[in-house]
Image (tube, rainbow, N blue to C red; front, side, top):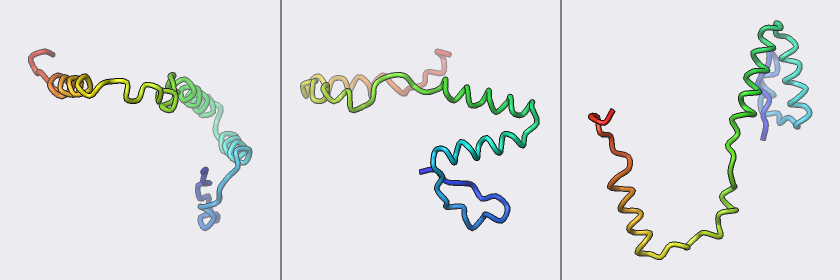
Length: 93
């Protein structure tokens, strides 16, 4: 769901849902109001968002591995994580 932010007298219409095309048009209208240097800053920001999308697989594609550990191995792994992880050794840094 995409919400349009309130603008001027449109505060009462702040719950208006925008379609993808309306959203793109609104972004373009707002960017057109900016100075060229600010437009470049917006472009760099959007490009950084595109590059920050995590790569990998969806969780549903990993379902095939559910219950692949026997209970003893799962317990041993849980104990190892609890004993060794999330601990800070100030002398190590």
